[in-house]
Image 1 (cartoon, rainbow, N blue to C red):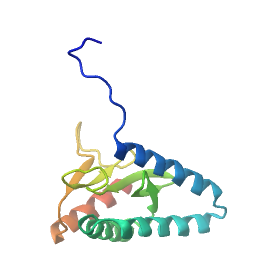
Image 2: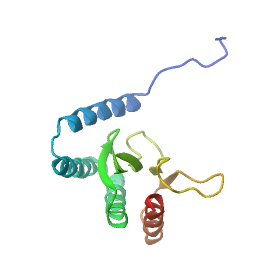
Image 3: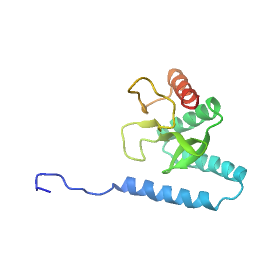
Image 4: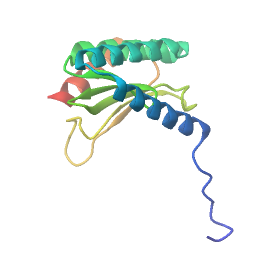
Length: 149
């Protein structure tokens, strides 16, 4: 590598913390026994994580959670890298990422390749969230319904 090229500096502290949270989530999930108990505990873990968030992220996450669980009841909430995520058949379909977690300008609602949002040869897979309006709520509801259709 020449001296003019940037050097790899490793993961940020926030990224390392998220990876550690993910490892802890995986260990906790492996210790859970009954499927119903696991689902109930994962729901509680998501709600507890949302409650810990800073005000603006918490308000957005609460609404996103309510919209997703109402619009797509087949999606199961669980923590994913320390953030609320929603799965179908054990695979992540969408997730919420608060702005404070990675010190970003806005929160994000992201969709994985499991989401059926395909629209031609290019489509959005993540959406910035700065505030919750009736229009935003309707858009999230429509996206989540499409994602699992």
